[in-house]
Length: 50
Image (cartoon, helix red, strand yellow):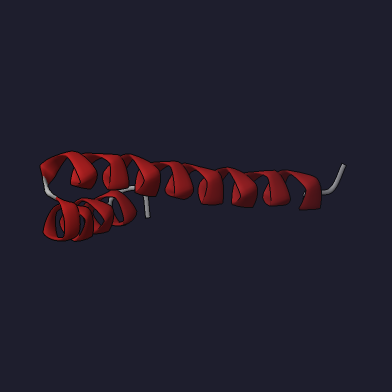
C-alpha cells in the first residue's frame, strides 16, 4: 500500500494536470497510505492482550 497509492497518484495526477500536480498527488497518496497503516497498527496494539 505504501508503494501503490503514491504511484497511482503520480500517474493520475500527471495525466490530468502535469508533473507538478502528479508529484503533489503522489505525496497525498503516500500520506493516505501512512495514515491507513498507522490506524491498523494502533488497532492491533489496542487488541493485544495485556
